[in-house]
Image (tube, rainbow over all chains, first blue to last red):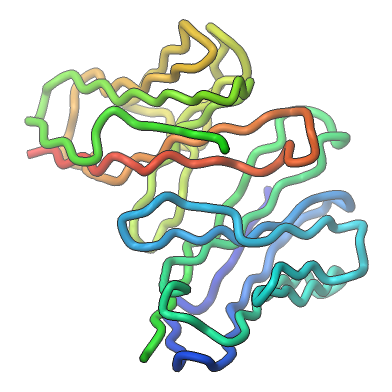
Length: 118
Length: 115
């Protein structure tokens, strides 16, 4: 079974600084997707960034980028120039590729609460 | 934009009551999900549905049932609420087609308290 581990329950960062959130996962599949979702306080969860396992290039979305290490099964999220609006719970998630057959369940980590200090 | 709505943001019920949580989406997505979110446990899948009248158990289906009579609506039912079902419940949708086929879209959540 796939597992997703987020070992940092809480993190803090000064506004305008850079922070990295860690995520490791375990799978025997070769084709899969990894995600970071953001859940702001009292607001809906939204997708931040997605990485396809077959792509060697790390995904980036504006100030958000990932460090995807497939062999190490590591998928960290880097937030540059942190803003107050980045304060949220961040969830790492895994989903195997649809070509793997069957239903592609999403497995979530337990989340990392990010505090942004003004 | 995908819009996923849930019938209540906050709900307080008594032990033994039958509870209905409703989720409605407007993007014609085939798949709909119910998750439970608890501190330290992340999101856990209760049930999902990949088509009208179709349902599959997730990781923690005990004490819950679901109904999907129309494509846009997915209901979670607690037949006899218990205190250990006090939690945040999240509805989500996704689709098997398109470029964003594997992204899940979430509702705002329902915080249920069972007294």
